[in-house]
View 1 (cartoon, rainbow, N blue to C red):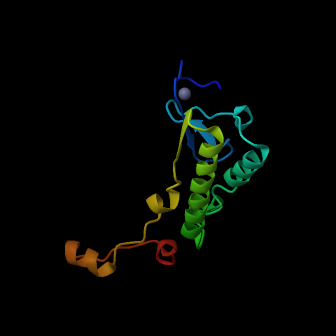
View 2 (tube, helix red, strand yellow):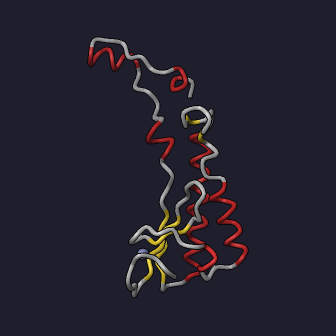
Length: 137
Ligand SMILES: [Zn+2]
């Protein structure tokens, strides 16, 4: 398995979804690994690829990368499936590897629910202006 690390006596991998990549990375140098190079069952590889291809179902790419309605729930479900797949990768690779999972936090980072109007008014003496799409979540 080739990455930027010179020599690992204990291989650390990370399962993380992103757009148009394989879902497994070297957790030390963050090199995106070829799924085909990993000694995993074909069934698990297929599930991993199906999972990574669904990354971003919750993002409206055509409209400023906003969250689609119900997007947070989709992202959460995708993360839960990712955790389960990570456990299976760890099982198949065995004790020579350490496999961790990194969640997608797109929705939570960018589209947290707005602070209540009254709380902002109490603090600053003005009413906040939130974009309508944020309020409709
Ligand atoms: Zn590496």
